[in-house]
Length: 570
Image 1 (cartoon, rainbow, N blue to C red):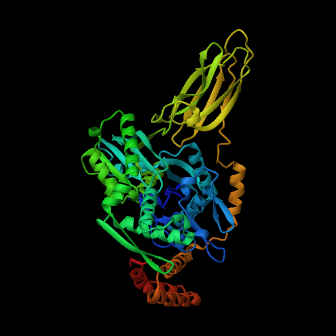
Image 2: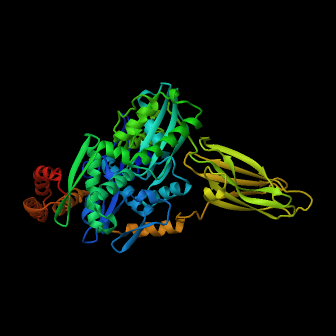
Image 3: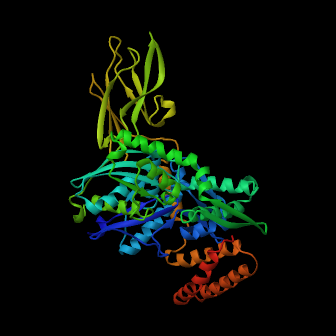
């Protein structure tokens, strides 16, 4: 395959992001400069104004919360801005920096430039959020060949193992910030999505937030009164406890506040009780997906767990109880979406190893337009939602309606396009509008055919045709709330290009120093002095500017640093 044909697969996650490529041996994950497959979705500034991306930024979330940010994926497609120092960033710009870092890693691995990508998104991302993801990719210098729903990508990774089987998958994808569930069927080399559902504001981070509020209350801590750095350190401790509960029935740690130890302890039983409202929110999308697919629970052959948050016992227990059998997690839940995106990249580039593989998808939301209902002669109730493409319709798809003006003699019809499931448009998401001119006709109602065409990348085309004249009007959806225009994308791309970003080949050293700083902040007494000496030793190696000396020093210090990090004192 030529360099021009290479398409990479990217899992742009709330907590971590990964990149892959399809090879003769199947999808392969690509390591970053630190030798890890997972790049934390975090961005920050160092003291000298250099931008840090990934692990180096994540390690400074605790010590420099005002100069670092994470979890910005949830704000994609909104006007929300994160403040880093004195500069504001939209979620698209921050995501673009993560994507650029992944692009650099792929180019270092492949040995040539990469400009094309498949990017995974939550199945329940709406039109605005999908457009924001594409804008982020464009700022990162990537052309999006296709956006693939995360559960679909996961099923691709699993389905590739036995593409001739006839299997029905249920994919439960609970990541850091979003929850998706999809039902897919595999038969004769065809992977067909039957139904998708989910919750774009439910993820592992919500479980951490709930647990932090509970432990703070038990310890008589008022979260609103804690400084940003203290809140960040507390959250790091709570996140560690949450992870430990996946291995034991109880977890404990000490949180150091103003020089005093604050003991924190929680049992798995208590954790399950306080997060029960969250686990209840997992049930409804699963039930809706099964219903939309026209199936029953016993028709599901395989249940796949995807996303790091599915490691929680409360989630696995819920799925086991619902289906009365254990779900599968043979592939690392953190890796499976990126691997599936790599498979889709192979399909998009028509890799010879995938010639007999076909992929179909569905519309995650119902698409329609606003209509009015006559409740009495010449009295109309406005704001009704008229569906044209129902959710979970196989895409690409094209559907049409014939509609009429409210009154004779009317010269214009305004089509307001919405996405959602509610009967009234006020409860759905407006994604565009189109004004259609019609002949002035006082004898009859002019008929207008409106056609929606929706493709696998989430692109919607609206085409109207005035029946009497044959005049057609196409809709180019613009001006969605929170969506960047092309001019804004170009301007922000130019600004990002001028940023001083830390060189990829120095990321190991930057990340290690950030770890040392975070460790120093969290310890007291003699252990803090130990870290001070380690910092001095590593700084001495850095001043030598000899890559071999620096690498040897870093390797030698790894063991004592890791030992101190694993203590229950922060």
